Picture 1 (spheres, rainbow, N blue to C red):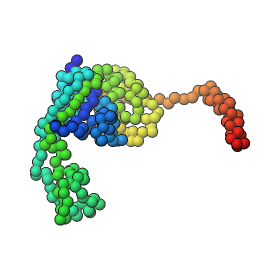
Picture 2 (cartoon, rainbow, N blue to C red):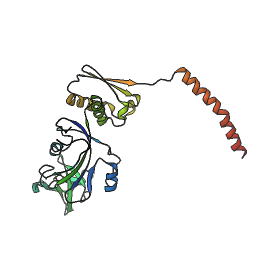
Picture 3 (spheres, one colour):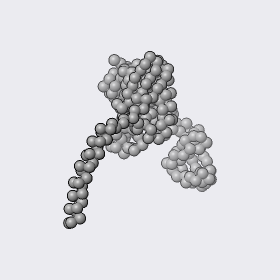
Length: 257
């Protein structure tokens, strides 16, 4: 079944500048390591895309329409379809003092934020710093190699993927999804309470459900706390007592030596 606008899909991708061999971006760990761009902060796993919703460049998402599961394709984006043409008016000159007052030592190649915009320092000299505020890929023709891994149709899996998009620490299969009319019920493990900024992450997930799952009006979380039964505690205690004499014998033997 071909991809259409609004579909939930999982893809793998690599991105290069046309006529250059080096990969600049990918969600595949092995490719990132080979290209020397691996980062511990990046999640290398199949990427969720809701086609037409801006998860990728709009022009790239449009060219995914019509592809099918397991299909691979090289997609070329012109500068106008990607990050635009280079604009010479976006190359600005600043006083070196502006940077020193902010504790920044300006040097060529350094990415900086100035005037609310991000740019790259081109040169430094004579008390002046030249900054290029164009996107680093402006003026470049990009080539994406896309593989469609899955077109998601099941309601439960769509929810699991949306949740994982925000709370990646918990394996997808540990999120149990139920639906009662217009209420979505998620069973989550107790480990969720140990995740930093979990409140903000859950709000992000809530916004996604509101935006992409129109038939749901209420969201309910159910935390699962497994409790040990008394007989399990007793068995554990007996096991510890049985192993204690053995441990004492080992320690005694070591002391004699």
